[in-house]
Length: 331
Length: 269
Image (cartoon, rainbow over all chains, first blue to last red; front, side):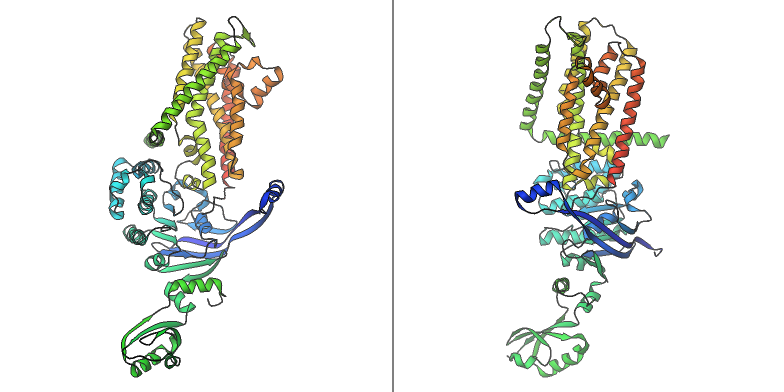
C-alpha cells in the first residue's frame, strides 16, 4: 500500500447468494418451499489505489459490480475477501469519524424528505453532523451559490424538477464537507444542461476542498470532463486502470480523419489511404492507423484539394461498448 | 464534562429536528389530518364501551373491580399512545427503508443507527391516547379515594418506563429480522394483537395464560404492574425484576441489532 493513497483496495471480492425463481404459480410455490440459491461473485479480486484529491471515473456495464464496490468502500457491506482502507479507516466498522469524512450520493435513491422543502432536510442533516447554526447557514449559502439554488430550497421536494432535486440532494450530502465523495450515477436521468451543471459543480467542489472523488456514470461526458483516470470493471473484474486517452489508444490503434474537398472524388480513390467510414463526393471520413498517420496525411495533403481537415479519436462510447461485447484481450 | 453537556444538547437538537420535520410532514396533508383525528376518537370510545360492557356495577374481573380495571385500561391507553406516536411509525419505517434501500443513508450517518431508527418519526396521533390514558388513571384513582403518595408515583413512573423499554426492545428485535426477511410487518401486527391482552388485568386470565403473559410475552409488565404500583399493591421485588428485565431486553435489542447489521446486503441500485 502506498503511503500517499487515501483509498486502497487489495484483492477485494464480494459474493452474494441469490435465489432463482421460475415464473408462474408452480414456480412461486416451489420457490416458497425450497429456495434454489446460488452464489454469484459480484466483485472478483480487484485492487487499486486512489490518491488524495484525485477524481476517478468508475465505469462498466450494468451489473458489473460498480455499486457493490462503492458500497464496500463506504462501509455499507462487508467484503467477502480482501482489504479496503479508506482514509486509514476500515470502512465497515463505520466509526463516526470515518463517516464524517465521506459521503455517498446515489442517483437512484434520495435522502431528502419528499413532502418538505430541501431546507428542512438540510437542517436535519446539520443537526445529525453536529454543525452549529451559523456553520450550517454559511455552508448552505456557499453550496447554494455553487449549485445556483435559491427559492427552490423552500419548495417541497416533490414539486422540484429532477435536476433541482439532484442539486438539493448534493447539498444534503455535502453539507458536512466530506473529503471523500462516492458518487453513484449522480447525473442519471438529468437533461444535458443539468448534467453540465452537476459536472461543473463537482469539479469546483473538488478544487475548492481538495476532495477525492470516485464516480460511476454511464455518460462518457461526465467521465471525460471530470476524470483524469478511469477504472473499468466488467463482471466483477478490473479490466483497465488509466487515463481515457491511454484507453483510446489501446482500444483503437486508429485515428479518425475527416476531409472536406473542393472537388468531387470517387470512393475507390481513398482505399489506399485507410478504411472508409463515411463518404460522399465532397466529404470523406477515414480510419488511418496511428503508426502511418503522418506519412499518409502528407500524401493526402499533397494530392487532394482539401478545404478542411479534422483529426480525432473515434468516439470513446463506441470503443468501450465494442470492448464489452467483443474480446477484451486488447487491453 | 463540557463535552458531555454539548452532546446532550446535540441529542436534544437532533430529536427536535426529527420530530419537527415528521410533524410538518403530517401537516402537509390537511384532509388526512382530519381523518386521523376522527379515527383516534372512535378507537378510544370503542375501548371504553367494551370495558363498560364487561363490567356491571359491583362486578369483578380477576379480583379487580371496575375502578381498578379502569386504571389498567388507563395504562394500556397510555402505552398505546406511545406506540402510535413512536414505536409503530419508526418500526414500520425500518422495514420500508430496508426494502427500498434508503436504509443506506441511515447507516452512513455518524450517529448511532439504532438511535436514528427508533426516534426518527414522531406521529402526533398518539397524543390523544396519552391524554385519555392519564385521564382514565386519574378518574379511576378518584373513584377509590386514593391519597397522593410521592413514593407510589415514583414507583409507578419507574415501572412504566420499564414497560416502555421492554415493549420497545421486543418490537425492535422483531423489526430487526427484516434485515434477513425484508418484510416482517405482519410479525409486528401479531405482536400488536398480543399486546391488546394488556387491556385487562393479568389476573383475569387463566393461570397458564397468566404465566405466559408475564414471562414469555411480558404483557403483565406493561400494564398490570404499573397499575398495581400506583395502587400500592406491588412488592419491591417486582420493581427490581422489572428494572433488570428492561435493562436486559434493551441490551438484547442492541446486541441483536449489531449482529444483524453484519448480514445487511443493501438493496441493489
